[in-house]
Every structure is written in C-alpha cells, then in structure tokens.
Image (tube, rainbow, N blue to C red):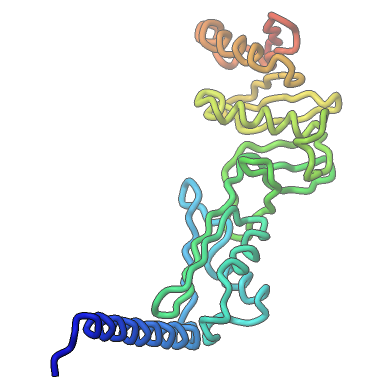
Length: 260
C-alpha cells in the first residue's frame, strides 16, 4: 500500500511526538532518582586568608550546617536539600563572608566558604576583644588562629553595628585611620598599634623602637601623615630614630618632637 505525502508527514510528527514523550519520561525518571538518592558526603572547602590563615575550618562549617539543619545532610534524600537555605545559614556566621553550595550529579553537597578578612583587632575600654573586617563588620576572635592585624587599645567605646552611619563616632574615626594606614605600604609596615588616650586622641605605636606618634584626631589626616613622611625622610634620616620619644602632629603645619 502506497502512502500519500500527507500521511507520511502525519506519521513523522507522531513518531517525533512519541520520541519526545519518551525522552521527557526518561529525564523525569532520572530527576526523580537523583532527588531520591541519599547524600553521599558533604565536601567543604574554606578559602584561606592571607598567610594561609583559617579563622574557621571545614569541621566548623559542617557543625554550623548540621546545627542549623537539625541533623547531618549525609544520608538524606538529595531532593530535600535546599542549597540557598544552607548558604543563608552559613552567611549568618560572623566568620563567613560568602558561601556557595551546590549538589553534584553523584549526590555530594559541595560547600565553598570565603572567610571575612580581619584588618583591625580591638581591645575596648571594658577589655572586650574582637576584630573589624575590611567592611567594618564585627568578627569574634578565632579558636584556631590569631590574625596578624593592627591592634587598637585604650579608650575605645562599645561596638555598635551602625557606627559607620553615625555622624560622629570614635569607632568610625578609628576605622578610617586603619584603612588609611593599611593602604600605604610605609605606614602598614611601620605601625603595629593605635592607642586611644583619655582625650580620645589617636597615638600611633611603631613596630620598632619606643617612639610614639601623637596624631590627635583624624581631621586633616592626609596632611598630618604627609608631614610625618617628610619628617621621617628628611629629619630622622639625619638625626637618628632614637633621638625623640614623641612626634606630635596635632599642630597645624608643624611636627613637634620631644627628645629622649
């Protein structure tokens, strides 16, 4: 029996539709099997900070996930795992800047964590200690490692999360000073501590020697540090580092020194 052209076209369409339907059924079955497969493992990668520092490790990350989820992810159906929800759990932790979670084709949960980078360690007026990271978030001390950062001590008020939004706040000035110091290779290599005296003035403590640099406030900070740089380059290179006990930058256009 000969088939006409229209019949052949209809049969081709029916065959295509049947093939497409079969393919969709296979895909749906595969997805269902994948969702029902138990999680085989939770693999965690924590990106190290500078100097290969880990304020939080993979064991901590798994513990956070298990505590927030209510139980271990391992052995649970992969379809029950919500990667976005796990990311939100992890990013609520003070050490975690960012978390990326994905479920692989072989039912493993892959977790990649980026840590917050501490830039300043604070010991406030009540003796409480914590870090500020590069965006001003409070980061607790780690049980694993002490980050090597600039240290601030003295008359420092209690932390408030909105300190950067305040019109006037000593922590805001201290954070600004920290960023300026760390942005300059000379100052970041030279200073190890900022002391806040009873007048809320900043005093810089060098890593070498007993010399103190009295900065005062952060007003005209750029000009103050420029004067200090010129003094170091032209004055101390001839006079010697041990001649002065204090270098005072509080007076406009001047560098006032006190001899040992």
